Length: 257
Image 1 (cartoon, one colour):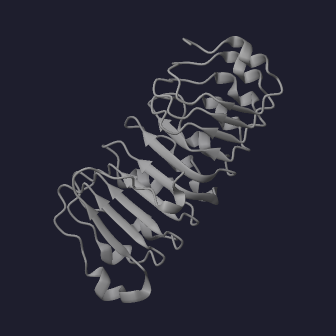
Image 2 (spheres, helix red, strand yellow):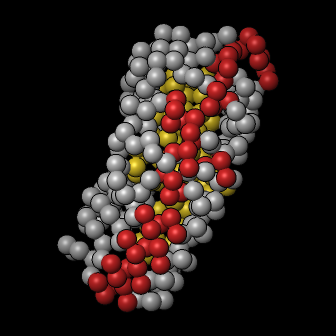
């Protein structure tokens, strides 16, 4: 099928729609008439570029799953869907949807991947991630030119249990944004820090609930500050894991689908 027929938008009682894995670049505007829809799945739609701008009318929508749809630009009207509970991936381009459009979506829960597709900093400090108390897993896939300023602005919520940071571009990991108030963090992955030479595990020891630490493709790393273990001893169940070569699935088992 080359495109989804407009007639699908006439199924007024539809509550669940799964269009995953298709090769459409765009979808018909008539889908915005499905005002009773509660779950919409668009996972692994590799060439899907946009959703209808009228999505703001779908006020009953609770779950929008777009994982692995990496070319997708969400419409700005999605900011009106303040009752969304699931939004598992947002791609940040130079135009359209910005992180600030997340500011009122405080019902989001579970896992969220924020995937930067360019050097876009605007709006990070207005995303209000700190208010999203039901988010327990966060993946930040940074644009290579952004680092500490972006991470500080995001203000992660204190209930996070799993945090993965990809493509950090600084030379020394500044841990202040990581250790503040993240007392529930059990899993931390640092991935593809291509310029980073030092990771001070002594300060990361403030993450008192940490059970798993994964450091993957840290190509220029010279010092891993293992003085951590001497200071904090058995106060935390940290498992230090380093990986070389092909990166593995870094999701903590609890948060895998």
